[in-house]
Image (tube, rainbow, N blue to C red; front, top):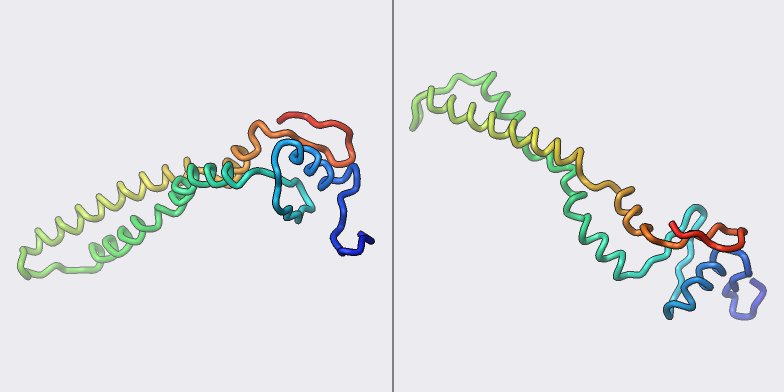
Length: 146
């Protein structure tokens, strides 16, 4: 910390030192960005990009139930509050169209809710990134493989 450049230097035994020691032998790093007060994860950009591409689409399904619900609610309200008139089609045909639309959006809603419950979580992504990694306990000698 007291060096002329103002950049703190890793001290043997701290997290930055252990990370630098573990990775410095395996690859060349241009820059280090260190902002850890809890558990830290060090990985390559390629592994992070691959993991995010695998899971991004599945994470987006967590909110997929909003579209069918947004259709179902006004269809149900229309069915409950409207008296269909004879305009281009008969009133029974209009009612059948709205009933079919309601049933279709209800089925879509159920499927979307099931997919949302089964979708990828943040913990799944962190688990995949850390799978097979080495774990270094700060202040403890040695490492263990996760």
